Structure formats: C-alpha cells, structure tokens
Amino acid sequence: MGPMGGSRSIRGRIEPMLRVAMLRISMPNLRPGMMIASPISHPLQPGTMLLNSGVSLDESMIAKLRETGIREIRIRYPGLNDVRNSASPLVASAGYQVARLVDATFTAASTSASVRLDYNAYRAAVTGLLEKLSLHPRTTVFLDQMAGHGCASVRHASAVCFISLLMGLRLEPWLVRHRAKLDASRAREIANLGVGAMLHDVGMLALPESVRERWAMEEDLSDAAFREHARLGFERVKNEIEPTAAGIVLHHHQFADGKGFPAVEGFGHEPRPLSGDRIHPFAQIVGLVDTFDRLRFGVDDRLIADRGPTPVVRVLRMLREEPWSSRYDPVVMLGLMSVVPPFAPGTVVTLSDGRTAVVVDWSPLDPCRPAVRDVALRTQRVRGWKVQEPGERIDLRKRPELSIVGAEDTDVSADVYSPATPGAFNLDALMRSWIDRAAEGPGETRAA
Image (cartoon, rainbow, N blue to C red):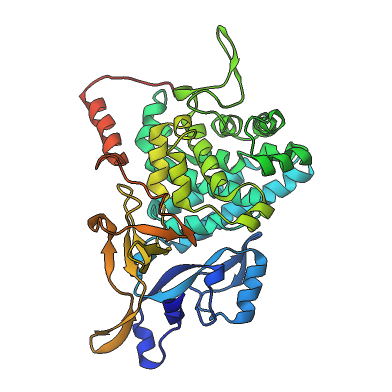
C-alpha cells in the first residue's frame, strides 16, 4: 500500500498537531503500525468490541482480525477532516442497539414459533435510531460499518432497517404524496417502516433448512418454496406489530412491473401480484433495499467469506439496468442513490492517472465523481509547526479528464455511471416540483 505505512502518529511535539480522521482499509492491505480510528466490533456479535480506537496494530492482531471474517477496518490518517462529517458515534450506538435487538429476536424465533414479538421494544429502538439519523443524515461511514457486521440474517436485517430509514427521511414528500388519505404528519411517520424492515425476512426462519440452503446457492426468486417465507412471516407478525409494518413482511417482494409475489385477491380478477402504486410505499422502499443488500453481500455467510462483497458502485449500476430497473419506482431508486454513495467517504480508490486517493465527500447529483484527496503525504508548516497531510484535494466533478477506476480492491472502471442530464439525479428538485404543483391547486391524488 506504500503511503499507508504513514498512518503511524508523528512523535514528540508534532503529534498533537496531527489532524487525524478515518481511512477504510481492507484486510489484505493492513500493515503493522496502523492505528485504529474506530472501535472494531465482533462481526457475529454486534456491540461486542474486539479492539478500541487508538490501538496500534501488530502482526498477531492483524492475524486474529482476519480469522474473525472482518472485511475492513478504519485506520487513523492525517488531514482527512472532511471524512469526519460522515461518521457519528451517536448513530453508530443507536444502530448497534437495533442490531442487538434483531439478533435476540431471530435467535428466539428460530427456536420457538410461540415467542412473542416485543413491538414496543422494536419501535423504541427504531425511534432512537431515527432521532440520531435526523441530526446526522449523512452518516455513510456507519452505513458501511453496519453492512459488514453480524451473521448473514442479522446483518442483512439490520442493514435493511438502517438504509430504509435513511430513505424514508429523504423521501418524505414522496411518502406524503403516496399516503394522501392520511394527515400529512401521520404520512411522514416512518417508525413502522423501520420495524417492518427489521422483521421483513423473519419468515425465512420457518422454512426448511433445505429450502434456505437452496436459496443461498441459487437465489432463485421463482422458487415456490422460498416464496412461502413472505406469507409465513406475515402470519408470524400480523397480530403483534402494526399493520403497516406487517404489510412490509408480506409484500417486500412485490415489483412495480407486477412480477413479484405473493398473489393478492382482488375485485373481479384472479389473485395476482401487486404492481405500481398498489404496493405500499414502505414495501417499495424495503423491497429495493433488500435487493441492494443481497446483490452486494449475498445471503449466506460461507459464500460471503469466499467471494467477498460486490462493490457498491457495481450494485448501483446493476440496479439501474434491466431486469432490476423496471421492478422499482424510479423515485425510490433515486432515494437509494441519494443515501448510499457508490464510493463512501474514507474509501481508498485508484484514479485513472494511477494515483491512489481517498474519498472525502460526494454529491448525489453526480455520485461517481466525488471529491477525493491524494493519499501521498506531504509535510506542511502550520503556525510554525511541521505537520503531515495528504496531497491535492480533487473535485472530480470539475476534472472530467480523471475518473475512478478502482475501489474495494476491484476494477470498477466499467461500473461508474453519470446522470444523462445535469438534473437527472436531482431528487430534491423533483420533490419540490410536486409541492409547488400542490400549492397551485388540486391535482392527481394517490391511494395511501
């Protein structure tokens, strides 16, 4: 990794002058002497700390970390204050509370179908996370940390909950528009979105092990036995959580093009899947996030360990193409793209001119062209003190001759994408247009 060895703190009088932040480093690139910037929790035991921040790694620590299945950690690196804006210890703490609750629920549900679900505890955990997210809406660093922890089912449920809530906050005008039968204040209420997202796959625990193993290997959405998990999950939760949350469990595999499941009875026609606006907006959000996380990590711990995660930028590119693009509302897709950066702050990337850089900021308007810093350290004088800082800050939106070609130890040159027009990814402008039209007079209304 070359310059990564420079992550050791400068000694003596210069050490207090270091402006240190986080750099995401994958396990193969760890080196002795790198200093941990963010506490490392056990991947199978959310909230159980293995190493605290400030610890300087040695060979034995690195070997033990690799044995746990951790994929990457954050190390201290000078001069990356920008990255700090994407990290919030308060959000992380609230998120791990959700993960622990999911872990306890899935453990209990896997041993007994009669265990009662504690809706009040779920709602309290989700409300606590929502409060922190409202104050720190750009917590993309924790988003990636959450995605890398826990056994497959717990990690997946926790990550889907976290991302769905971020999307719910961003898509508030869309939710009000689609839940027009409700008072606006109730239409904005998304605690049940989080509860349903936590429990969306609880029905998987009721499937025979052979069906779960077949799903893990084949990921065949047409498998009739696998499809039963939506109905089984709904039967498990329908009398213990709010209807809008239970509806997510039943309908998170419905597609906008009408090719999802389960089939639903209707007036004057045979049972058939829901489509378009007939799908509750909460189920639309969780359905897309469920697919995003599955495409990134798969659904089985063994396979994840063998192949590693798919780069975020590749998953987002795939979702924007068929067969996925026609399965989800374009506004919901913009909602996902507005909260999940293809290259999260702190990510080490390779530029097209061969330089190694770290992402320090990004814009949803052109997400594959973030602001980066050259990681090659240079010595600067600040008020007479010598300090080390990374090199040039580069806004790739202003440097069309440069692009990102490598990330997450993968060649992603074929995965980067751009808006077809300057405003194509401008979710805020789209939602403002609805508000403006609504203010002008009565218009189209949709069922909630």
